[in-house]
Amino acid sequence: MPDVLIAVVLGVVQGLTEFLPVSSHAHLVLGQRLLGADPVRFGLPFDVAVHLGTLAAVLIYFFETWLQLLRGLFAGRWRLPLILAVGTVPAVIAGLALEDAEPSLRQIPVIVVTLVIGSIVFLAVERVATQRRGMSSAGAMDAVLVGIAQAIALFPGISRSGITISAGLALGLTRVEATRFSFLLSAPVIAGAAAKTLLDEGAAPMLAQPDIVVVGIVSSFLSGVAAIAFLMRFLRTRSLGWFVPYRLALVALLLVLLALGLV
Image (cartoon, one colour):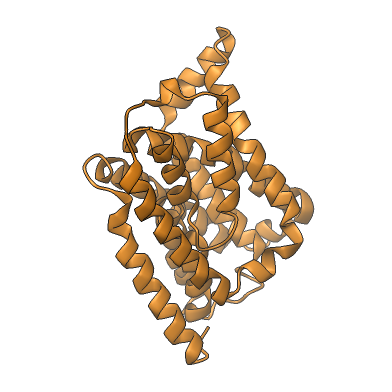
């Protein structure tokens, strides 16, 4: 398969699974191996590219919210920016602490276990969720707890969106507000991870392969916007439990492929 087409597929996969509660790590690892993607060409530079695409999706979809946030800063309204900052700290700390362990965490057996654990969490939280609060009532402690959930999502298979939405639901937020909070919190984490990789590796590897980088950014952006719009509508009337059968089917597929030595 041509590299540009692989870039399209992986970009779409990243854009969809970054925001749907099905684990982007699991799908990217599976996609790269099944498509036979060159691990060098589709390594960190491409990973940064597709994450920049999903970052753009969050910024564009919630443009009005970000604009209000910036206006609020100039008007002295610091509550939401501070909440987002506080919620980002646990993920930053965990990301730095687990940096050396990341390759081992991406192993298929680990992903299988975390997919199951995440599914159990989704079902358990949905049973106790009260959905009494909006994001305007969220405080610093809420942000810390959702931030800790975001840090847990560094384990591939958990799903960052799924675990942070679950945390919001456990704190009493409505599904829509928990989803909005989750997506807003994703922006600084995605931006920070991309910035760190660029600082560590430099921009040269990305500039050396502009074809797949541009395709990856565009495809992950477009599919990311579609995924955000879909989930915001879907969770108005449905629960995270709807995604559990898919996650468990993915577990079964990974186990079969693992047994056959294909992943």
